[in-house]
Amino acid sequence: MFSSPFFGSLRSSSGRHRALALVVATFVGWFGVVAQPLARKGADKKDKVESKLDRQLQRTLGDGGSARVIIRARQGKLAAVKERLQNKARGKGVDLPSVGAFTADVDAADLAALASDPDVERISSDAPVRSFGSITDAAGGSDTLLEILGTDDMAADGDHVGIAVIDSGLDNDEDFEHSRTDKFWDFIGNSDDHPFDDYGHGTHVSGVVTGTGKRSPVKLRGNSKKERKLSYYRGIAPRARIYSFKVLDASGAGYTSAVIKALEFITANKDRLKIQIVNLSLGHPVLEPAGTDPLVLAVEAASREGLIVVASAGNYGRHPETGEIGYAGITSPGNAPSAITVGAYDTHDTISREDDSIPGYSSRGPTWYDGLAKPDLVAPGHAIVSSAAPGSALFRDYPQRRVLDKDGKPNYFRLSGTSMAAAVTTGTIALMLEQQYGISHEYLSPNAVKALLQFTALPIPGYDVLTQGSGALNATAAIEMAGLIDLSAPAGTSWLRNSPSGQTTIGGITYPWAQAIVWGNAIVWGNTIQTNQPAWSQAIVWGNAIVWGNAIVWGNNVVWENPGVWANAIVWGNHAIGTTDGSAIVWGNTDSLTADTIVWGNLQQ
Image 1 (tube, rainbow, N blue to C red):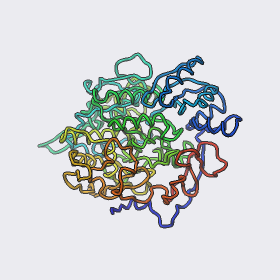
Image 2: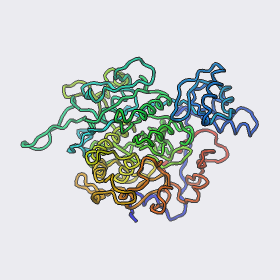
Image 3: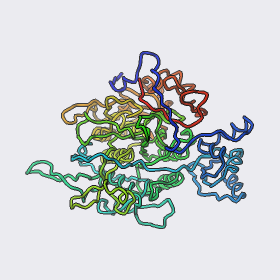
Image 4: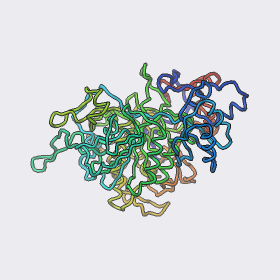
């Protein structure tokens, strides 16, 4: 069995974790969500009604008021539920066929009636979503992102790969080749049919993925006989095609339903448009289990169709006032099992991995309700310079974050966050897909891509798996591994053309790969990646242990040391945080806490 110093640190011979130093703080004023008891009802009726509502809607039901909702009906009953709601003079909103739902604006009385309707499966908030890029005081350095990733000398540039960026839009300027960015769809109701970005976040994300860096300052590489220029702020995959889907407005906010509609459109048209990757550098607080969250369901549906969905972990890793590190801040759809969920790490503008660290803002796991071990990995996300949208709100409101181009004009912008980390990962995946496509004219499956990213990741010392996943993105190794896979190999046989080295040398120091995969909540060790497993197919939901049979080598449970405990409840230190079906979520005192909370303080193994 393979052993790793990083993953080995997750084990304990004591039979239990030391208790966490818990400092409990509510989400009030941060996520703006607090669970409240229902109005006085009979206990059975109350429980039955509550069971169909997410925690935000339980508050609406108890306090009164109105809400934008996503209503899921039982199979074959959608039309009947819509008709009954329309008879009450309520608009039906938009249809969301991928999750068997529709949207509506309702009040507390409507909620009670809908929740009592046997044809209604579930009612979820049409939750506001926000981007995960933030303004930073960090100064920039001289090293380019490409040098730090090690992709600056690669011939791969993302050709033959299509990427859907669901965000605030795109300012189609000189940093993007028009022929590769002229596809634009607006899902928030504007009449514009040309690419635009009135917030600026989508342009920055797109620039990280595929900006040409034409206006960027350059540095000379090589010697006098073979000298070349390297753009400081060039994107990772400048030949990839970008498809922009606008779901965020000029303030960087939007609604879950708009994201789902964009995902539905992308899934339905992926073959015609030749889209392989979806980037979601946005999200909302987790309000219900992943199995009923409409945004997660839409992501899972897209993954089953072969789309590789990359999602930000969220920027909720520290208390906004005290700065204390907190766990369980992963946002939706980062809690989707099949999504590649990415946290951020700070390169400190050096190629060396010795000074890498994880900023406090990067959200840590586990996920609410389900207790999934997330993020899957971390990628550079701190003080990233990329393309600016000159007419956007970010550009206007934060002039100190503007970065000058080669002519001294402010055509670039600096942002930090897991949004940027997701974009860096998306660009890397584009190079991985191109590497395989050049050999087989086929694309890797979403599960295979996630497995390769985790397997080749470089663990950052001093951080647990709920902070960094498998470790830091190792772009060169992931791309190399993508080219070694023989997709024609029969299931159950070796599918690697050559044996990988299992290590990467950076700045003269050799680092071992993680060589382990976090599959659900267990560590898959050893040489599992070397075989064409059923798990790598797109038909399997990530984390489904059934596909392994006896072939899997199980490590100790990632978070909860005693696997027997997992069968009944998720145990964190000596505190229950919820059952596997999400029917009860409790931090700290198991009989008194009714507010939504997060755990602050350091995880102790």
